[in-house]
Image (cartoon, rainbow, N blue to C red; front, side, top):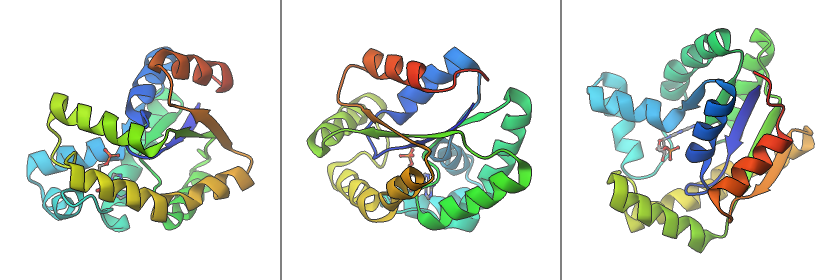
Length: 190
Ligand code: AMP
């Protein structure tokens, strides 16, 4: 199973990816987690990325592809697929990802688009801030990240719909209901 999770911040893509990974053992790859790991290590990539993630802006593509592509290729070999959480986020990233997918014969089977109204997204992210204390879960940065989704990521919805890959799922429901719908609509074999 090769799936892209395309959703605004707070829609639950991390949570649903974790559940799908448990159900299928396909690797869950979060671009945000990879960047946060680099930042925590204090690597050169991490220092560059931190300036962007703190503001809620997207990190430059070259930085992202350098760390992400090898991880995806390895994970696909090891687990027979991937669940991409938070990538791609721009048309440029989507087109470059499609090219890599073709070259390595690991193109995506489906793109899940989790939807929820903006006040719900903000409420969930503020609740996560209390639990996890993520540096970019402040009210101001949350608003900016949602705006970045609207301007830079939303065009991907039509792009993937046009390619016949989009699977739109209402995420303004209990986590278990969303998980059950995903299990019934995705090709669950690894
Ligand atoms: P996330 O954990 O998916 O909410 O991502 C946290 C932050 O990491 C984002 O606000 C961006 O600064 C950065 N990031 C994650 N994925 C990407 C991506 N595909 N392109 C650029 N920046 C990204």
